[in-house]
Image (cartoon, rainbow, N blue to C red; front, side, top):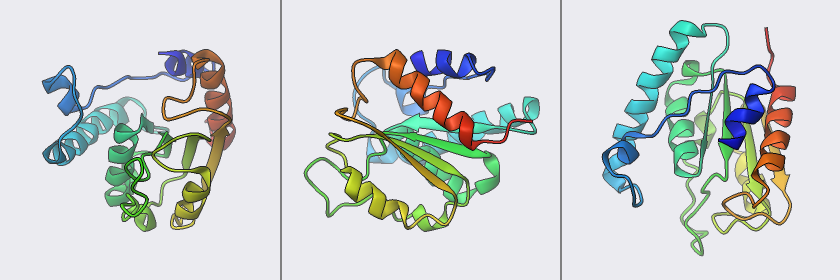
Length: 172
């Protein structure tokens, strides 16, 4: 909610969307079989939004939601004009050998990663290495001392995220 409000202060309309797995179940983690259905839900939501925002449409997500958004745009880059990834789950905690980056070389959409320096789903150093796989324009915003939830001071972090993102997108 804080991030939507921060973008609103920049004149950006924000649509918050629960992935289909979350619409089906109010709690619990996504299951492996949910991913394709979740990407299809994102595709449908983006298609609806493109009708009202033909000149600029951005997508973002936290953790699994961001991963699904990035995988969707790797396969269909024209669906959105920019990508915001909050706490990208680079690998499961404690399992750096299970990187979730196979689709990174196909990303052609400009992307901004926001990542805590204490995130157990991937260190800043690991993320910097993975970012090198992406051929599109990439920006990394580090949140000092934050974990996967990006910290306690949500409004301050949200303001920083929105301001940094707005610097990097062209606004007609």
